[in-house]
Image 1 (spheres, rainbow, N blue to C red):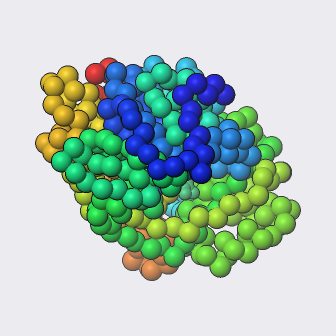
Image 2: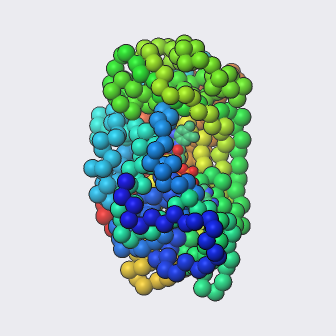
Image 3: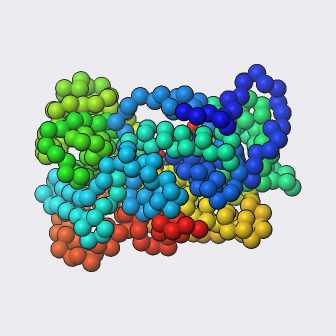
Amino acid sequence: MPARHVFVMDATMSERDDGDVGDLVVIGGGHSGLLLSLALARYGIRLTIVDADPIHRVSTAPFDGRALALMQGSKHVFDALDLWPDFAPIATPIRGVRVRDKSTGGSIAYDADGVGGIFGYGIETRSLRRKLLELTLAEPAIRYLSGRRLQSLRRSSDGLTLHLDNGQHLQTPLAIGADGRRSALRRLGAIGTERIDYRQTALTFAFRHSLPHENRVHEFMSEAGPLALLPIGPNVCSVTWIEHPSRAEELVRTTSQDLLEALRECQDDVLSPHEILGRPVAFPLSAETARSFVAPGIALVGDAAHGLHPIHAQGWNLGVRDVAALTEVLVRAKAAGQALGCGETLRRYARWREADARTILGLTDGLNRLFSTDFAPAKVVRRVGLSVVNNLPPVKSWLMRRGMGVSGDLPTLARGERL
Ligand SMILES: Cc1cc2nc3c(=O)[nH]c(=O)nc-3n(C[C@H](O)[C@H](O)[C@H](O)COP(=O)(O)OP(=O)(O)OC[C@H]3O[C@@H](n4cnc5c(N)ncnc54)[C@H](O)[C@@H]3O)c2cc1C
């Protein structure tokens, strides 16, 4: 990996002001921080990223089977930034989705023929971050501070002074929080959150199977939560399996052979799994949304703004739309000669994004409640609802387009257009 602009600070360095950080600082070099930085750099905005993970940990991370579904609307952002050729080789197209409610026997099938042929792509999470990092390190407008944590901040008339854990100071008019669900910048900026605890745990791992996936996602709904199989390669799927926490604990500890048996049972053996790849990793589930996406001199993107339940695969897709919207308002502000951290610019971003995030939070939370219950009236709603939607093409098409992120008040980049 090229490392031209990397600064790995020595923890013994004395406290000092670090001079030119560019136009702004991004805290967090996960998927959201890296994509945002690449997008801003593409439009001539210079910046510094601070990320807690050392680069070698990202570039040598072992396969863990975790993957995400990148929807077509997000792919449009990659297209508009000319990034897709770098990601196409690690992306498996999704052309269909089959959902089955195990307790009522109801089902619904979506095919992408009427909506452009592809819903989205299955991408291994680790490879996605690695590729984003590789492109970031090769970008002259981006300075990358690796293995450093934001620890505190001070406001002044000039903007913000960010204090890192090695004693370094960064002075900036605008800090962007892309530092995930437990965002330090959000906390230090005194932005409150609303939290929902789901008392569910998601397990992720991958498996090899004998029957072809035919580029289809299979989702099985049960009272404990959904189990989704996402194609990520020839005869390889990634699993997101939501369970009661105690059952999830058992599955994490069980042998690969027993896990394989349990998987076969839960997914009606549609793909005929024959080998577990890696070990399952468990994520206790919650939703955590910032009460405001901005504060003076601060904007939040991705999971720092909204961590969602993984049902319906919306989490990072929402983050990609944050990236597209924030890039648009900042590039337009710069072109108009406005200060990047100016209140009106940040409020425009917040108004645009908070509404979308509220809608998707309501949708994912509502779907999880509706499907993760044995309550008889909910089962009737599920059975009737699935059958009605399956037989009403306009409703089905609306749902598909919304899930794909290609409808609504989209940022320019999310329509696949350049700014
Ligand atoms: C089981 C599961 C399945 C999912 N499936 C999907 C899916 O199919 N589709 C989808 O769109 N989304 C999905 N998601 C959600 C998706 O994984 C996240 O939305 C996405 O990875 C968030 O990226 P991020 O960059 O915003 O945050 P993170 O990945 O959390 O990155 C935060 C970064 O900030 C850094 N950091 C943290 N604190 C500091 C600090 N103080 N100083 C400096 N740096 C700091 C961290 O090192 C990290 O690099 C799923 C999530 C789960 C758990």
